[in-house]
Length: 188
Image (cartoon, rainbow, N blue to C red; front, side):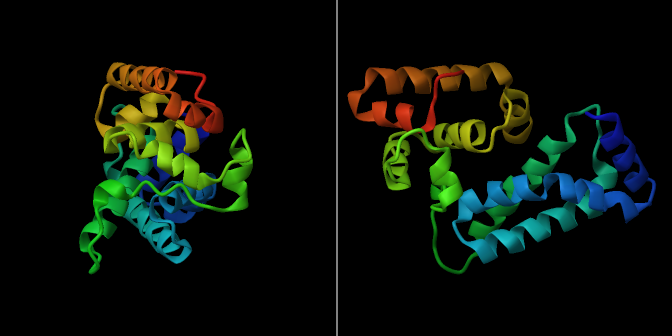
């Protein structure tokens, strides 16, 4: 953790929330994208993002830098907030299916090929909920294995093994090779 970030967090924990804006500015775009990819709705993502930062500001005294990175703690709040959103929503949705990748130009420009995101969704539907979540966090959210481990409660070794298995499945299945090309899964 950066010294400056730790200093800001310590100040917030000591009651000086005036510097929380620095934390907000550093993470707002990443957390918003994380939530938007899972909801697919701009206003919902904005509402949940706001709630995440309010919760994090309210609970910052409970953050312990010896237990993990602040970013992982924040992503865990975001992840749980998305799950809570789907649990409390009046319409019935399958929480396991909240892996929306978005359909805006910025996302499409990140794809190596000019194929539509619908194809990526089709390919990802071949994987379990856990596998999709790991791939989305690793590729689209750009999180490290350590961060994903902190967020999901799984070990880094288990995550690396899961990614390795996913890559093997993709390489050995001609129908899934398209996802390999689309999202550039050439690392593990």
